[in-house]
Amino acid sequence: MKTTKYILMAVAALPFLTACENYFDEHQMDNGNYRPSDVRTSMTYLLTDDDVAAIGKQCTWKGKDTVPSVYEAKALSLCSETDSLPYTAWKRIAADKAFNDDAGADIYVPMFMAQKFPYLDAGTICNVTYPLYEGKSARQEPFRYASAYTLTEDDYRAIWGGRGAAYLTADKESGISAALKADFPLAAEGKIIVLTYDFMNVQPDTIYPPLPYECHVGELIESEEKTEHQLTGIVGKINNLLQTFYLADGADTIIVYKWNDEHKGALKNHGVKEGDCITIQGKLTFNSDGIPQIIDAKYVSHTSSPSAAPKRLTQAETPTPKTVIYQLQAGEWVVYQNEQLTAAVVLPQYVYDQLGVTAIDNPAVIIGKYLRETYQYPLAKQIYLVAYVSKSGITADEWTFDGSDFVMNTGFVYDVMSFVLNPESWVANISTYYTTPFVGDGPADFTMQAVALDGLSYIWRYQASYGMTASAYVSGANHPVEGWLVSPKIRLKKSEKPQLTFYHAVRYGNPVNNLEWLKVRVTDNYTGDVTTTTWEHLQFTDSIPDGSNWVFRNAGRFDLSKYNGETVVIAFEYNTTIGEVPSAPTWEIQDLLVAEEEEVTAFIEAGNQKRNIID
Image (cartoon, rainbow, N blue to C red; front, side, top):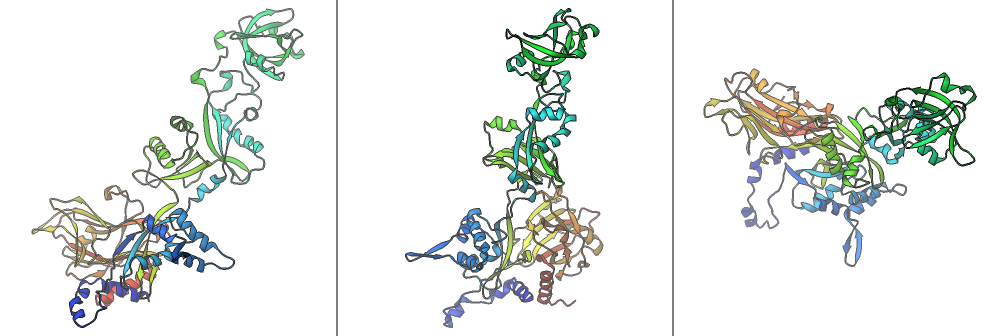
């Protein structure tokens, strides 16, 4: 059956066949039903939003009643008493404005093609481009249940072990895992937390007292907290008899009234004098007159240099918020990472502040701009995950750098599928990824780029009788030129053993140079410019024509299986700038196919039969 299909395609590609039909003669013979055959072998069609909406339409009017549309009827016919997935998947087409894995284009586009093109004839082949929702990557799935959390004062105290500040330093970030484990004891494996905490890489005892219980004198008095605190300040007038003194911190003072028994004589024994900076530890209390004081005081340290006295934090020394993604893995909270990602980051708060919003509702624009400003020298195909606050809560999306800009991975792509009109109906050829005869049908959607012209106007051109042709021989002279013929994107999303094949003729040149000058290339990272794209050279598996005649022969099979799941671009490079040009060849290409191995086999058999080639 497949061989027959390709024979039909090949025959239909010959322009002289349809020229034999004569509309006038047929009508003179009273054949009033006659119409010229309309077989198109390089037809393309892009499904519009209206087309997709029509396919997803639930019902049609029939008189005053509604009946299921042909598409709804098809979806219902695929259901069983226990499985309604085909119908619910079909309904998603209208909601998503795209097909999906459970309601594919291969099921519903044939009916659309029959309605859209009722007069095309068997043998017609059409490459249909359509929207497909593949879903977001598995990397984004855990973020559906992510939570936002900010470290509390108790978290800081626990991380510092009772001596520290309300922020973390680099050496204390390792304590976050234990703190989160205590805060979220019932968290499920894989849980994501977008964690915010204050950070400053300056040890707190160089800025202000190190205990998390610490505070300034005025703050302590106002809080009336009678738990143990650590205070640092300037020693005021000392009563040596009672070993008491006033502790001053700016405009605030407090009396240190009673010493812990183990620290009696601390002032004398440590040589503390008025004006020194001292750090003590003790409990707040109030006497009968309501005067605040420190009792059970313990000596910690002091210095005689007033300049060394701890000071209030200046603006430059203020801790800054830091937000990091954590995930529970094997029972431990670790910083989220994925080897497939170049970076996994949280959108900084300043972005929200600049916009005056608390949630991002247009991430493609806002986060795209942030990525361009933050990563100025990305490499193509690098993937960046950005977590941010949306109207629905914590959200994570991915962006891929395509060589020129960051593109948001929305889960929606445009796919291409080949459909063939058999005598009975349209059918999807899901094992054919791209095909064009060139001959009689134009250059399809291939593009041409000239890199070196040496005074010529073009290198590649389309000729209806021969297909795509390239030559550097003009007006009796051979020229050193470089020109490329580049295919559209070809998706190999579900491929297994994809191969490229085509027919070509080579005239002139010589076998040795022609192998250097005529090359087949492939890439999964096309930048839009052949000179900035990294290409793989696909070696000819069979010998190429020796240049002695114009006979078209099959170029052999080019294995593309290493690109399974990728989107590729095929290119033909004509380059006579390599070495001298004693005789520039002419290269003609037609009947190109990218398909699974068995399809390629049938294609070559049909092509050889059309050309009377016997191997």
